[in-house]
Image (tube, rainbow, N blue to C red; front, side, top):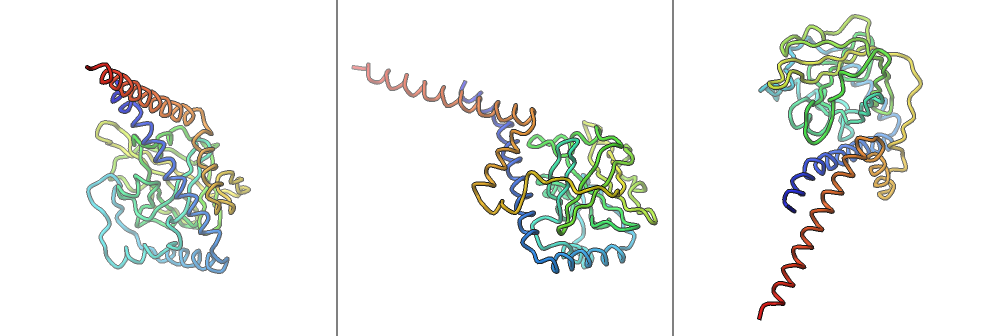
Length: 283
């Protein structure tokens, strides 16, 4: 029975562990960016703008396909952009409680840890004619990631934090396409766009859900999760605990995990006590 309780708690505990890992990445990213001199952040943005301006049309690779980007000079140059922190940036979608790091590339390793930026598309720094494509998992046992992307509407905002700037986009359209249909993520002259992509069509993940958003002028949202005071380990721990309990779903997962582990520990202790009593009664 104790083993059963542990088995029941394992997925919930794994989900909480992933939540903590992701929030630590977000905290570390934000803290390091805040510590960068303003001139250095401005230089990073200028370099990213220049990179986007020179970006040639490229054949995008499906994030859930078998190929990874070739380790050539173009990819090496890409990895040097926005490389002053562990993550390229941060994405926040308040409507579906998403707060994740944006990582270079969209291979399995990146998608297991956050949101991947698809090599070959614009860096997510904004600007006319740019179109950044960001990929995230659906159906990942350890974390929701982009599970609720299809619940977004035209009233919802997406915030991209990059090099100390916050760019805000409003959802424009949702489309379901085949994995090899990349026309919907091509740049549009004069437009400032991002597209979020995740897999759909279980089993087999036969399609890709594309959520496109267009840049709008909005006041940057208050960041209640990460501030410069997160340099304090105690404060960071409190922020993570607050994050784990800030929604009913997370409260339920935490309660189930704690309850299952407590039940398992109680069963093990009961078994140990019973066994000790049994041995004491032996002649």
